[in-house]
Structure formats: C-alpha cells, structure tokens
Image (cartoon, rainbow, N blue to C red; front, side):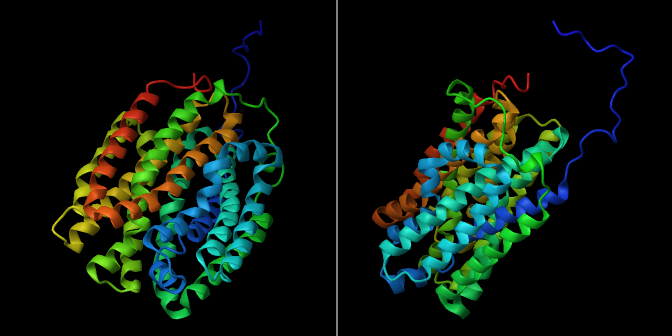
Amino acid sequence: MTPRPTTSAPAPSEEDRPRTQWAAIALVYLGGVVAAMSFAKFASVGPAVAAQLGLSLSQLGWVISAVVGVGAVAGLPAGYLIRRLGVERALISGLALIAAASLASVTARDFAWLLTARGIEGAGYLLVTISCPALILRLAHERDRGVALSIWATFVPVGIGAGTLAGGALGSALGWRGWVVLVAGLTLLMAPVVWAFLPRGPVGSAAAGPVPGVRALRRPTALAGAFSVNVLVTMPVVVLLPTLLIEQYGRSAAAAGAMTSVISLIGVLGGLSVGLLLRRGTPARVLTLSGLLALPAAWLTYGGEGSPVLALAGAGVISVVNGLLGALAIATLPLVLEHLDHADVGNGVIAQAGSIGALLGPPLFGLVAGGFGYQALVPVIVVGMLITVGSMLLVGERRGPAVR
C-alpha cells in the first residue's frame, strides 16, 4: 500500500502550480472560429449558389451541412488517430485541409462536385474540432477547465456570426466564389500562425496513457447522444435563417446576413454563461432545464403570424439555448470520463455525435419546410428538445471515476 505523504511535506505554492495558458488557448479558439466560418460560408450566399448551380432547398441544406459528414462517420476513429498523431499536428493539418478543399469548391459547376469538395473539407473540420478542446484541456489549469471549455464551445456561433455578417456583404460584392476564396485564404493563413505560436513539448505530443475501451466510453456516449439531438434541432434554425428571411420576408442577402450574424452571436452568451455559472456552483440540472425555453421560441420563429420581429426573437432564444446546452455538454465531458487522458477520444465521440446532428439538421429542416411549410418545424424542435433535456438530466446524475 502506498504510504500517505507526511504532514511535514510542503504544499505546492501558487507559483509552483501550473497556470492556465490563456494566450495559447485564445490562439486555439481562433483556429476553431476560422474553421466554423468555413463551415458556414455558404449560409449567407445560399440563394446565389442555389440559383447559379440549380440547387433545391434540400440540396442547399446538404451543401451547408456536408462539411460535417465525415465527422458523422469517423468522429470516434479520428479521436484514436489524433491520440497517436498529437493534437498540435492534427490542428495544423486540419486547417490546411480545410483551406485546400475550400479552394477546390470554387471550381464547382454542379451539385455533385460541390458536395464532394465539402466532404473533403469535412475531414479537416473534424481534425480541428477534436484536437482543439483536447488541447485546451491540457493548457488549462483544473480550476479553469470549465470556463475554458465553455468559451471553446462558443466557436461555432462566433464563426457562423462572423461568416454570415461578412458573407452577406462581401458575397454580394465579390460573388459567392470570391467570398469562398477569401475564407480559404484566411484559413490557410491560420495554419502557420498556429505552428509558430503554440507551445511545443508534451502539450502537442501524442497521448501515452491507456487506450479507452467501450466500457470507458459509455457515459461520454450517452452525453454525446443528447448533444447530437440538441444540434439537430437548434443549429439549422440559425444556419437556414438567411433563407427564411429572404424567401418569407423579402429581405436582401446583406440584410439577412447581418440579422443572422446578430442572432448567431447572441448564442455566445449562452455558451459563456455556462463556465461562469458552473464555477459559482449553479447545478448543471438547472442549466439543463433552461433548454425548455426553446419550446415557445420554436412557435415564435415558425408558427407565428408572419412577423419578422417574432421570428428573429424566437431564433435568438433558440440560439442561446443551442450555445448553452452545447457548452454544458462540452464542459461536463471531463466529469464523465474515466481518465482525463481520454479527452481526445471522448471529444471524438462528442464530435461524431454533433456532426450527425449538424449533417442531418439542415436537410431535414429543408425537407420538412419544403414539403409541409415552415410551421411543421415547430413539433420537430419540441420533440427534439424534450429528448435532449431528458437525456442530459439522466447523464448528469452520475460522475465518472476521474472526478471521484
């Protein structure tokens, strides 16, 4: 039996304890935001792309969400791959691959070519979305992990907000192909910046601990399932909002992009609040129950009297719920892991689940709205949110051995 340390052993001083490397975390976060901009770059220019290439609303949904198609299939295997490759190298490779595939999509002349390019882009997006939170977990001190991971969870709404805001204006000025080239160049520039400024050494090296098996991933998988349903019924509300504003309310592409940008950025408030509230002792159950606010918000967005103000208000609430529940799932992942060293594979499970929701959500919404009208989306959101909240409450009842 290992003896207990004697009372004479000096406790580590605050200066000796590892500190959170906030500058490096900010750089990792920026890489995620740029990747999310690439994911959403077709949202604000969707009508122009559809008109030029002859796409239906459902096909446009697939183009928007196809970037996460690889993650829907290979999220977990990619987590094991990144465990061997190292999170730093995986992040840089992912950014470079996103940029290359984005440039290839500029030459698209039909749906098949564009969809293929977006699928290749999805491989890079998957590397980024798995490696970044695992890297942040290693860069953050234990007391700051919840805050750091909840901040990371806002990278999608921030990226979508920046992409739709800039895409609405620049897409009109440069055309959708010029806008895509611009985003590809920004992503390509980010790769050497990350390489130059991320800390070297153990942080970016491959994990050397025991490989997690099926049993070790049971609780992370249950959490990931709830996360997937949340993404499925909330993310398309924001991503397809420009199309709703243009087709239903006659707004211009620039105006629709600006409005969607604001709605997307509102979701950041939900994500940022999670880490702060958890650190102050707010029960996760209370935060989970706030997801029920999406139920009346769904009616405001799609079932109201045809008012753009009500639609935007409802979409804003859903955006906050999306950010809050997404950040809660990511911030609580370390609590359900058997070992913190399993974070790379655990993030692979989360990424795969989120990718499935993001892949199926936009085309599902497009199919339902195109066949039955936008009001038919209300029960879809209601059922999805009830499943999400119920599942997260059940998972939250237990904590992993790493925490105990």
